[in-house]
Image (tube, rainbow, N blue to C red):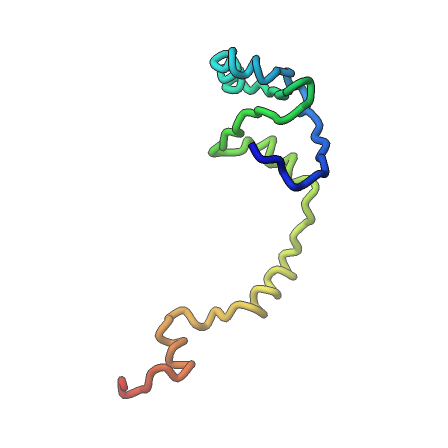
Length: 115
């Protein structure tokens, strides 16, 4: 395998709460390690005693957030000033133009006689 032309090294720390496994462990115990990943375990992989990578479980997407989680996330958010919000909406959104044909007429794309 050709050597990289880049000579700098990057120091990468092991993930928190991970099991350290060697390249040989990964090869010989792959089924056991995959089962561990499914259970949410993390692994720091080493080669010749050097940390070379991490195996981490994929985050599962949830469909809903609990009320308690939503409340906790929302605590640090700025409060919404209803009056300022309405003023911004009135300034930037033209509520008079609901019909796209009205907008086209206003831009001169159609004439009154249909031509």
